[in-house]
Amino acid sequence: MTYTSLNGSSNPPTLSIVIPVRNGGDSFRQCLASLKHFGAIAVETIIVVDGGTDDSWRWAEASGAKVLKLPKSGGPARARNIGAQAATGDVLFFMDADVTINADTLSGVVYAFSQQPNLAALIGSYDDAPGAPNFLSQYKNLFHHYTHQNACEEASTFWGACGAIRRHVFLEVGGFDEVYRYPSIEDIELGYRLKRAGHRIQLCKTVQVKHLKHWGVVSLLRAEVFYRALPWTELLWRDRQFVNDLNLKTSSRLSLVLTYSLLGILVASFWWTNLVNVAVILGLALLVLNLPVYQFFQQKRGIWFALQTIPWHWLYFLYSGLAFAIGTTRYHLRQWRTATAANLSQV
Image (cartoon, rainbow, N blue to C red; front, side):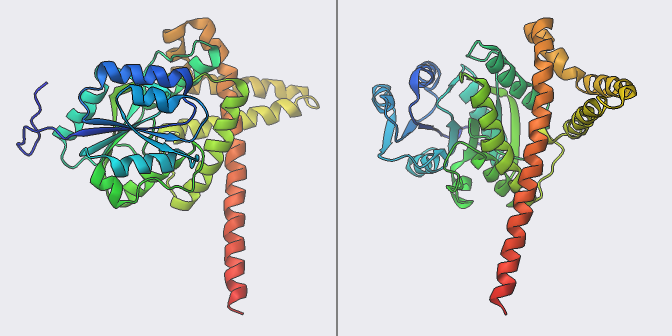
């Protein structure tokens, strides 16, 4: 591929890959294998071993990557920041240790930055062939793919699993917020700061990685509620970033209202049986509103798979709504306590 940027330069930006890992296991070995096959376009791969007890650091060294071994885990935000400081490329490509790249992933990143000198950052998407074969892993990762593939290309946030940013911009805005000690919303928070500083982020739907993570019921709900929804709610209130995109689309908000209305009507129908008709109407409305999602699942995995996703999709609206209510309460309570303490200090 020949690169010619809009400013006339034929030299593409150099690319540094940065990966945090802690007890990466077999998924990390598959990640390294994909880099061996498709990572030659990058000038370096920097792997930050964030503590852990397995042989991730040995596998990383054997791959030929530059390895930074931390004695104690400080979280992926800190690990990525350390990797970025050590990088020499013009563009930093962040990826998780449980994803693999394909033949076009990195070339797509370099091409996007070559053609758009004003582009500060970009994010990609999971592909439509998740690595773990069980139902929940297929559902969760395919739903993520669908969400990104149907989102606005002018992105409002960043994504650490498959995201690239010009190194000088990353350093100027201060990198990831290291207050997040676990895999959480450190990437979303960085995206909000980038947008607030006037930088442009693009969703490049053709830049894709494969997610290998195995999701179970407990791991999925714990990550979705405690590591994502609750802190994200508080971040939304802090930055007032209620953008009609990705998981915050108007259709998702309306679906949340319909789901809780349906639940309330079903409970009330135990005492007033004539409300069953209302529940049926609400259920049909919820199905019709989200029909494109279920059609997508049907096209990818068949009708039986699509039918199985419906209760999980509705459960997603239920726990998202509950987390939003709790997170909103916690945020405003904290604001009230801070204001009260400030007023008392002035007395």
